[in-house]
Amino acid sequence: MDLSTIFSRYNFFQQVRLMLRRLKERPESNGTKSLTSDISFVSPLSLDAPAGEVGQIIRTEEGVWQVEVLMYGMTGALGALPTTYTEWMLERYYRYGDKTAKAFIDIFNNRLHALRYLAWLKYHYYASYELNSQRPLSEALLGLAGVMQSAPALQNEAFAGLFMHPVRSALNLETWLENLFSVPARVRSFTGGWLKVPSEQCCHLGHVRLTLGQAPMLGQMRRDRASGFTVELGPLPLSHAPQYLPGGKFYADLLKRIREYVGPGLAFSVEIITKHDRHGVPGGCLGVDLCLGQPGPGFHRVYLPVCREQE
Image (cartoon, rainbow, N blue to C red):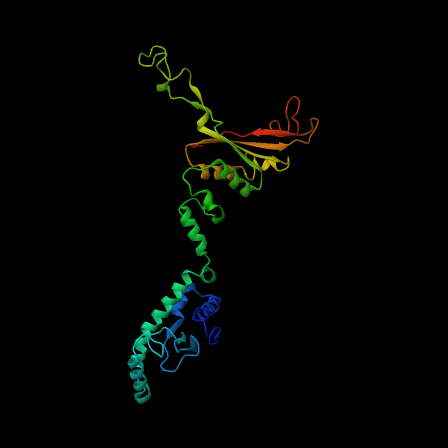
């Protein structure tokens, strides 16, 4: 692979970017690490005015591509060191063939230009994406939303804003489910359900401490409207509805996604609304597409079991 071609003489960053893209085509490529393992940067040993930012590109005996950077280095006409250093190294080279001092200075040149490119790469996401499979802008969005340590299903930059608030809204849940499953979704809050009451909170005959009027309630079950909500999916075609029923293709995934969004503590139930276009009593399933008595105006409502935290 020949990388001696100067792609962008007047733009150092584009030249290095294109070289790294070519190096990435190799099977043993390792992304930005090629910047230090396969490329080295040197400053010119000359006081001539530079004709651009990139000079000669050669391959050393060690197989490293050596790029001559004409600007912002340590030596040369536009180097950071005083001109005396460049003049002294020129004298050592042309009189004695000694390039020891130049090789020593190039250690710092190489590090300086590598850091320059990495600093440029940090703010140019398209160039960073060309070298790495992970998109840096996506990682930044996930980090700002605070979901980088969440479940993998929540690590989606398109919906990261839905999960960044500690209080999850019903509207955001509707939006997420509609995009995940491509079906209409509606959340009914405070539908609640029946909860079992611990025996120590119930009134018992012969129990002196829990007398009628002081104990919370009679019986073993109570209705709590704030303990749960209901998710409605549909209307769905009759052929698609079985995918969201127990044993269906999307049933387990649907419950998992809702639980990941709301977290522990809340129970929820799912209702599937199906389009009713069947008449008579041909083959069907009671509670799904078959009902007793007069059928509805065009839709059937299928009630799925309540999903609680311990389940």
